[in-house]
Length: 148
Image (cartoon, rainbow, N blue to C red; front, side, top):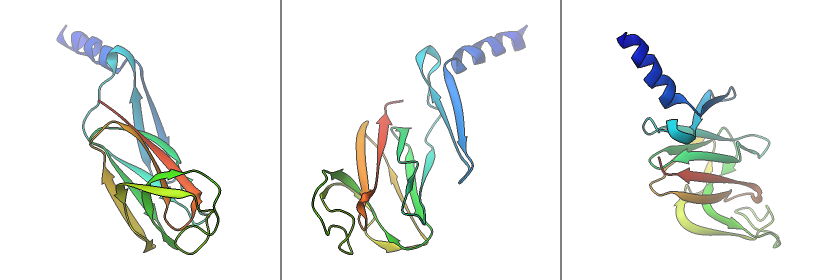
Protein backbone atom coordinates (compact mmCIF):
# COMPACT_ATOMS: atom_id res chain seq x y z
CA UNK A 1 0.00 0.00 0.00
CA UNK A 2 2.87 2.41 0.83
CA UNK A 3 4.55 1.76 -2.51
CA UNK A 4 1.33 2.64 -4.33
CA UNK A 5 1.11 5.93 -2.42
CA UNK A 6 4.78 6.66 -3.26
CA UNK A 7 4.13 6.04 -6.96
CA UNK A 8 1.12 8.36 -6.89
CA UNK A 9 3.13 11.17 -5.26
CA UNK A 10 6.04 10.70 -7.69
CA UNK A 11 3.67 10.78 -10.67
CA UNK A 12 2.12 14.01 -9.36
CA UNK A 13 5.52 15.66 -8.88
CA UNK A 14 6.74 14.66 -12.34
CA UNK A 15 3.56 15.66 -14.15
CA UNK A 16 4.35 18.26 -16.77
CA UNK A 17 8.05 17.32 -17.07
CA UNK A 18 9.80 16.62 -20.34
CA UNK A 19 13.35 15.43 -20.84
CA UNK A 20 15.72 16.01 -23.71
CA UNK A 21 19.31 15.03 -24.37
CA UNK A 22 22.03 16.16 -26.69
CA UNK A 23 24.52 13.54 -27.76
CA UNK A 24 27.30 15.90 -28.87
CA UNK A 25 28.32 16.51 -25.25
CA UNK A 26 26.03 14.24 -23.28
CA UNK A 27 23.93 17.12 -22.05
CA UNK A 28 20.62 16.17 -20.50
CA UNK A 29 17.99 18.62 -19.37
CA UNK A 30 14.58 18.32 -17.82
CA UNK A 31 11.96 21.03 -18.08
CA UNK A 32 8.93 20.99 -15.81
CA UNK A 33 5.86 23.19 -15.88
CA UNK A 34 2.58 23.28 -14.02
CA UNK A 35 1.74 21.81 -10.61
CA UNK A 36 4.52 19.22 -10.72
CA UNK A 37 7.29 21.69 -11.58
CA UNK A 38 10.28 21.57 -9.30
CA UNK A 39 14.00 22.12 -9.59
CA UNK A 40 16.14 19.36 -8.15
CA UNK A 41 19.28 21.37 -7.32
CA UNK A 42 22.01 23.17 -9.18
CA UNK A 43 23.11 21.74 -12.50
CA UNK A 44 25.78 22.50 -15.08
CA UNK A 45 24.61 23.03 -18.66
CA UNK A 46 27.12 22.78 -21.51
CA UNK A 47 27.36 25.16 -24.46
CA UNK A 48 29.81 24.30 -27.23
CA UNK A 49 31.61 26.73 -29.47
CA UNK A 50 32.36 24.55 -32.46
CA UNK A 51 35.19 24.63 -34.96
CA UNK A 52 32.72 26.05 -37.50
CA UNK A 53 32.26 29.15 -35.30
CA UNK A 54 28.81 28.13 -34.11
CA UNK A 55 27.32 28.32 -30.61
CA UNK A 56 25.44 25.09 -29.84
CA UNK A 57 22.82 25.41 -28.51
CA UNK A 58 22.51 29.14 -29.06
CA UNK A 59 19.60 29.58 -26.63
CA UNK A 60 19.26 27.71 -23.34
CA UNK A 61 16.99 27.89 -20.31
CA UNK A 62 18.40 27.27 -16.83
CA UNK A 63 17.36 27.97 -13.25
CA UNK A 64 18.80 30.39 -10.70
CA UNK A 65 21.81 28.63 -9.16
CA UNK A 66 22.65 26.67 -12.31
CA UNK A 67 26.04 26.98 -14.01
CA UNK A 68 26.62 27.32 -17.74
CA UNK A 69 29.94 26.02 -19.05
CA UNK A 70 31.09 27.21 -22.47
CA UNK A 71 33.80 25.12 -24.13
CA UNK A 72 35.79 25.62 -27.30
CA UNK A 73 38.19 23.00 -28.64
CA UNK A 74 40.39 25.23 -30.75
CA UNK A 75 40.91 28.75 -32.08
CA UNK A 76 40.59 31.91 -30.04
CA UNK A 77 37.18 32.75 -28.62
CA UNK A 78 35.74 34.54 -25.63
CA UNK A 79 32.29 34.78 -24.08
CA UNK A 80 30.88 38.11 -22.88
CA UNK A 81 27.42 39.09 -21.72
CA UNK A 82 25.98 41.94 -23.71
CA UNK A 83 24.03 42.74 -26.84
CA UNK A 84 24.77 43.05 -30.53
CA UNK A 85 22.80 45.70 -32.37
CA UNK A 86 24.02 45.03 -35.89
CA UNK A 87 25.79 47.31 -38.26
CA UNK A 88 29.33 48.31 -37.60
CA UNK A 89 32.24 46.60 -39.17
CA UNK A 90 35.64 45.50 -38.18
CA UNK A 91 34.47 44.63 -34.69
CA UNK A 92 35.78 41.85 -32.56
CA UNK A 93 39.20 41.08 -31.19
CA UNK A 94 40.83 40.53 -34.59
CA UNK A 95 38.87 43.17 -36.51
CA UNK A 96 36.12 40.96 -37.90
CA UNK A 97 32.76 39.73 -36.75
CA UNK A 98 30.52 42.61 -37.72
CA UNK A 99 31.00 44.89 -34.74
CA UNK A 100 28.03 46.46 -33.04
CA UNK A 101 28.35 44.43 -29.82
CA UNK A 102 28.62 45.98 -26.38
CA UNK A 103 29.39 44.21 -23.09
CA UNK A 104 27.10 44.72 -20.08
CA UNK A 105 29.78 43.45 -17.67
CA UNK A 106 27.71 40.67 -16.07
CA UNK A 107 30.23 38.01 -17.13
CA UNK A 108 33.23 37.70 -19.42
CA UNK A 109 35.81 35.00 -20.04
CA UNK A 110 38.31 37.20 -21.83
CA UNK A 111 39.84 35.88 -25.06
CA UNK A 112 41.57 32.49 -24.87
CA UNK A 113 42.97 30.02 -27.37
CA UNK A 114 41.34 26.60 -27.28
CA UNK A 115 40.98 24.19 -25.78
CA UNK A 116 39.38 26.30 -23.07
CA UNK A 117 36.37 26.24 -20.71
CA UNK A 118 34.58 29.10 -19.02
CA UNK A 119 31.84 28.68 -16.40
CA UNK A 120 29.40 31.15 -14.89
CA UNK A 121 26.78 30.53 -12.20
CA UNK A 122 23.58 32.53 -12.61
CA UNK A 123 22.24 33.98 -9.35
CA UNK A 124 19.34 36.08 -10.66
CA UNK A 125 16.44 35.34 -12.99
CA UNK A 126 16.46 37.17 -16.31
CA UNK A 127 17.59 37.09 -19.92
CA UNK A 128 21.33 37.18 -20.57
CA UNK A 129 22.37 37.70 -24.19
CA UNK A 130 26.03 36.99 -24.93
CA UNK A 131 28.48 36.98 -27.82
CA UNK A 132 31.97 35.85 -28.77
CA UNK A 133 34.54 38.55 -28.07
CA UNK A 134 36.43 37.58 -31.23
CA UNK A 135 33.60 36.99 -33.71
CA UNK A 136 30.84 39.19 -32.22
CA UNK A 137 27.75 39.14 -34.53
CA UNK A 138 28.83 35.83 -36.08
CA UNK A 139 28.62 34.00 -32.74
CA UNK A 140 26.00 34.97 -30.22
CA UNK A 141 23.47 33.32 -27.97
CA UNK A 142 21.14 33.76 -25.02
CA UNK A 143 20.69 32.27 -21.55
CA UNK A 144 17.18 32.43 -20.09
CA UNK A 145 17.34 32.09 -16.28
CA UNK A 146 14.14 31.16 -14.43
CA UNK A 147 13.36 31.03 -10.72
CA UNK A 148 13.03 27.47 -9.42
